Image (tube, rainbow, N blue to C red; front, side, top):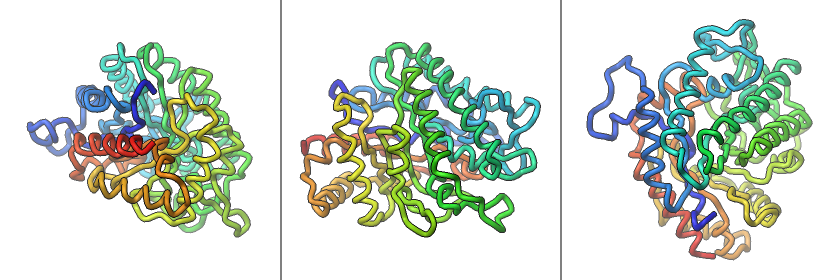
Length: 388
């Protein structure tokens, strides 16, 4: 990695540049602008570009900038529109679809301006295919996961769109190594049959394991063929579909299984999980078992086999000393040398808001200053790297 530690942001950037440049917050009803996107990209590049992995922030710039809208806009041959229940498939493209595509264009413009001459890894966060199918609705208002044909169309169209998107970004950033972080907060719940229907009275049928494997393999191959790398991030369920399902565990016929078993079949070699809240010893064991099985597959690979999300979801609560001590304790409990921590990646800060409700909550909140959590996660990665 040319001396860089793998320290980066989760991808979300839920506040305007005005909020932390001293010019005050925008008036109620105002949306963020393209200049906010570019300024956020310049700041992450300025802080992380020398020793860590800068990322293209997913700034909440109003309708169409939610994670599900950005992802849906990439789906080839599918059109979407906003509805009170969420983003849904529609037969004809309209203003909402154009707006979502415009937000992607703003992201690309920021990438071209900030990273055009950059040589090194740049990370971009997007929604994973399973969570996209969970959040994207059919025209009648139910999750596309409920319809085998609809969910396969969404997943296949998304893979095709991701390939074109990475190809486009590579033209804009010819010297950059593009890393796509695919966020899958609903993967374990979808496989377990724990996701609620839109009405909330029943649950959606469990997604067959073979379809999940096919979806992840499809997007991985699409991204890698276009010249990018993949980090599949499993933060656990949240939002309207929240079930409390652990990020690495799903249940089949009442039996707990490790999600890493499914991911191995898809060819995914790099995963991430949040350790912001207390996680069980079993999850630590699964995470480091994944690391042990995959960390030597390609020693020169930029993306580590295991990446950990640290700090709380707003970016606050990032205590470097406590975080490093906690990691060392976990490694000792599992009988691993401290040097094992040198091979881990780390991300911090807010996740990309996936739905309208999450985007609004991000806009209304008071998250920590970005400089604090970006430098903090960099310090954690550097301290762990020194243990090697």
